[in-house]
Length: 122
Image (cartoon, rainbow, N blue to C red; front, top):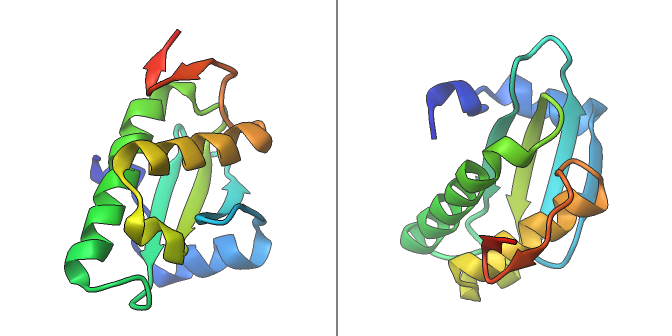
């Protein structure tokens, strides 16, 4: 994922936490702050040490970045999106994490409607 699509600064994370909307399922928490002045969305990832060792945490972040890369064209509004992984993600594979992410984004109408069958567009 390109640098322009990432949130890196603590101040930007804190702004999303303070002023953004949040929604969650068992695996992920998403904070969403709409930014009309931006041309595209940006994501910030947070995977705490309680989830697992560095290898597990980096795998989860890699899966989330890849899922966003595949969903890039379907995200509707420019925004800052912060994703916090919860404990069940440490036992999940890529497809399960992507499905969980799509579920949350669809529920909050941040994603264009589409049917998902085993990760493929239909």
